[in-house]
Length: 215
Image 1 (cartoon, rainbow, N blue to C red):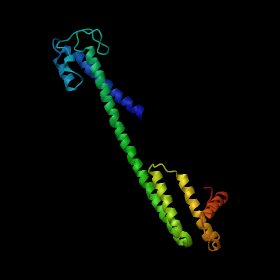
Image 2 (image 1 turned 45 degrees about the horizontal axis):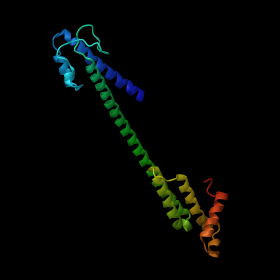
Image 3 (image 1 turned 90 degrees about the vertical axis):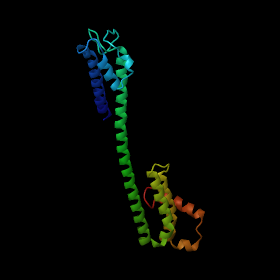
Image 4 (image 1 turned 45 degrees about the vertical axis):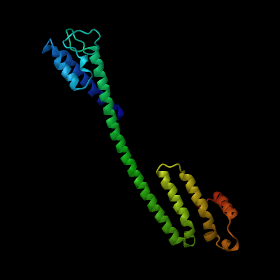
């Protein structure tokens, strides 16, 4: 896309400078003793200082573009001014197209983020409802971990320095002690006090047995 854009802009710029220079050369056919029309066009297009246009046609052996056998209103300084003007206009066009492209990409990015945020909110509500309806014995203790997980995922989508994988590991590490003591072995909670050592032990077991799958 950028290559096509540059070709289009460069072709327009080349046509513009050539038409201006041809006008500067051919104007002598209308009035061989004055460069007034050339100076007027040169000034209206803001190509450069009007002093660079001679009062009358002459010969400039240093011409590179608008070479002419006879007298001409074109000078080497004018050629340089036209070349700078074309570069300036080309750069302006590229920046304009780049701004439009940046705006388009930014709009799509915002739409994607909004959609992901919606999916996260929907998933969080669905998981919370599942815990409350199916695993009511641990839902109250598990809901803070659910909220923490989806809060971290939301920050991750916004570009924050958050690891999605680490957030999921932390969620399962926090959830497994509850699952083990409330669902798998509910008598364990009444037989001993859950402490940090027990939580660490259960987390190590989770990594070995993978009760939630390979996470």
